[in-house]
Length: 318
Length: 129
Image (cartoon, rainbow over all chains, first blue to last red; front, side, top):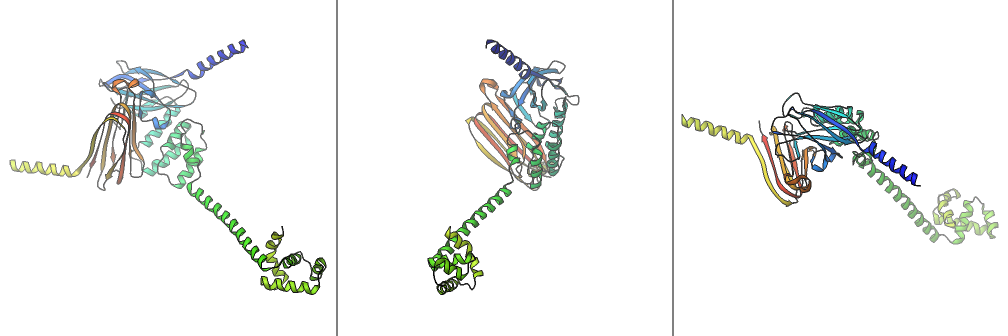
């Protein structure tokens, strides 16, 4: 027993060491002037709603920038792809500072898992932090492509919608695919239908899926409404038929005597007047009189016409 | 000559005043919880809209989202300042950008705070051709 306990503890320690304590790294050169603090921060973005949230709770690592602008930051990861944000701050600004805007942006996003090595390199212009300046894995490349579509000023809206659908369909990174769907807007019926098919290729348990599966897996409202209407109509028809039958039955029962109902049922069984007279032990002329009464009360002219009342008369005997 | 210069300056000022429209407000919060939608009317002749939304909190939460007339999120950010973690500096955020040929109609700036202490502001400029 003690041995098992020791083994379990060793396993747990080993498991936690290998699966939870992995570190990825971002290194590079920040081409920033002296108005910027010599610090870089990494935030873990656990869901897409946090992408533009400034909060120190999200920061998982920070690093120093040396006098040449070089930095290296390690941060904890796990085996699944996660979204991260790297940001710089200006001197005197709080650690949780987020500047969003084409030229003033102080952050960029990347995806990392396991022991990924990412590189940030800004060789172009001082103080401009661009999303495309971070590379190192395929998921981040796909993310850069997606964000360039999302923030495009030049693409027409319809083109953006279709490009986002394409990215959702083709991205090898599930996180990028989900983010692409998250950024969709104003879709028409066909586009929603396409996305419903695309969504099936993602894992619904992905922590970034959020409401995406709820939003795209539901049957469209129109379909729901029609199904409900048809169902209600079928129920109403069945109920109306039953009520109608009951009314007819009570009408027949009121108009025909018990003896006439019995004779009508025997006629429906295919018996002749003679056989009915023998079955009921009455005279043939009496049977004929009853049959004539039945005809006149039900406003029919033949045994064939009586078939119309078969289900009502048979049901009433059941 | 002086008269002419004055007339010229007045003309320039009047043309400039006509070609630009500004919506702006500064809000000081003290443990405030607000939930406001500000309607921004973009007119047919507005060729460009520049916006700047800023927030600096010592405590609380501030959310700002700008939506276009079709309900598409143009931009948005959230600040969460916890004095225990952020210290006296709190959290700071800013979103800005030009929108060239903005969609005509009613844009919506959603501002929301929860027990926020700090300063918020928004400025929206419209340029006419």
